[in-house]
Length: 450
Image 1 (cartoon, rainbow, N blue to C red):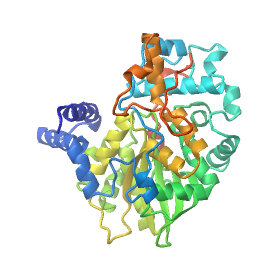
Image 2: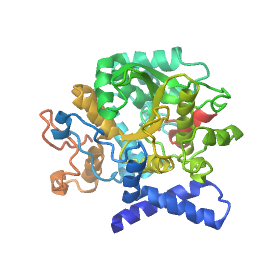
Image 3: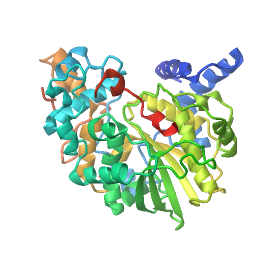
Image 4: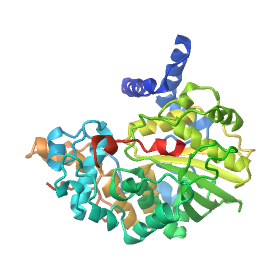
């Protein structure tokens, strides 16, 4: 392993470790940190890909068509989340003392997107002590401006508010007013696929070619068994459940979790005896008693995967898959996905009743939408959620107004991010309080396990 890889894995271990809770002995603690470092190292990630049905470099489908193999993406992410100076955040009205580096950047990008779109922020109403500029005003929220089209706004109102499942945990403020929430991201990302299932089929066939032939429908904030003792006796639910037909013609469900700015610090769902039982019943894990599965960054993934497996065991659907999606530069989310994948048993291809886990970057899904033919949707998603080159340029313009962004281009093209409509790379210069710091950064994962 290269020194830089050792350093990055070490940093993630130092972040992940304290969130495991107390370990029973120094030996367990050493074993935990060894397994954690192993799963976060490049070699461990390659081993995950061999041993489990879990992709660790998910920008390319497992079996892409020939056209996809020769095509170069129009989108390329920069290689590290840019540091945002306090002065820039103060100018934008988006400074939040408890934000992580990634959340600072994504908040900056959200404010810039709102300004580009002419969306009024709650801070413009004079309540600067209570709101950040990354929070939509009441009028903007009611007009549905947190969504990319009126059709998506209506879809969100129908599926996540008016006709939501019984006892579904939906935070209306996050859905309608908070651009940093993964709830509106899920609608903006998968809503076009729900409204046009032919588009959805083309996208999902790229990402899961061995599991998806066609998309039938999408159900939002879904659980097959809230508070049902056959599952987890709690409210664990998925952001969405994609009902599909498999290549063999069987019905299947792709249970989906979407992350955006989450830091995965907790709090976690109250641990129940039922969780411990389910860890053994689902037969998914190398060590069902591993403390990693109970840690703040991972326990939600365990709960959702267990519910997905139970849906097959209980006859809801003959086949299922559990996928998780998050930004590539949110290293905490990506680390949680990789660590969780390392806890899984190898998938037996002879047993189709086992629910596999795959994780994808948000950038990979946006690119799949682009390849599927919906360039406008892909562009809107990229500019709003993924264009961190713009954050870099905004920070550079503040610190060195006379510097030219082209002077810091990486000749390897790793830092090229923006693009012209003809697909050639280009750069674009940037233009130019949620309610409290606590609510702005409050975790979204806990809601599923209440």
